[in-house]
Amino acid sequence: MGQLNAGIVPVTQFQQNCTILFDMDDKRGVVVDPGGDIDKVLEVLKDNAIRAEAIWITHGHIDHAGGAMELKEALGIDIIGPHEADKPLLDNLENQGKRYGIVGSRDCVPDRFLTEGETVSFGGHVFEVLHCPGHAPGHVVYYNRAAKFAHVGDVLFRGSVGRTDLPGGDHATLIASIKDKLLPLGDDIGFICGHGPGGRFGEERRTNPFLT
Image (cartoon, rainbow, N blue to C red; front, side, top):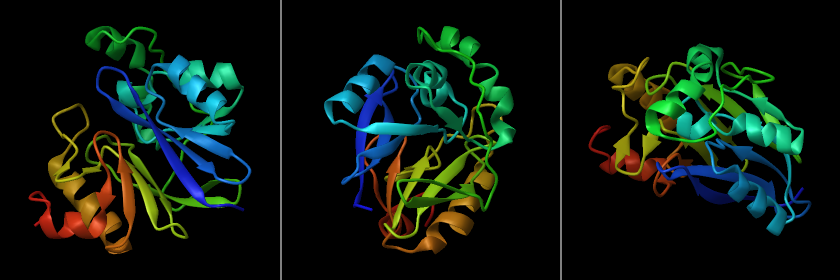
């Protein structure tokens, strides 16, 4: 097993960080949150000889899951996640796409929903599943203990937190998810988020105005 690496492909007009997690040695990997622009995602996979084994979804918003079915069909791989509480969002992605002008978005049918405490893996890299509602009811975070890394989706951003004014959002629940499940993992945990640059939990604990 080689080193865990990550590449980011900004997709849709929301510039969502579709993330390709992969092993540096054998180039096995997964695609996290393919919200759209699937041709671009496929090109990056091909150019870097990465063999995607699955699609992992953090939550059911259009910019994170709108292109998942297209990528599934292109590669013949399973869609895993999020938590089943986001099924109503996943069932409404085509309508979300029309509302926001995202062409080609399709309702998403995961092959497997996830629950708190499960693990998912590829190439020997094991990720723990943390159910972190607040931004979306079924939002999950993927945490790799060995690499001290988490993909937090839209739960936490550098200097901010996920919006809670969308259906199913709740600010108090979101802050509790961050403080009770993410920050206790340790200050040295690095994270990639759904939009903008990532960071470390310790910096957010100390300086994020929503958490201090």
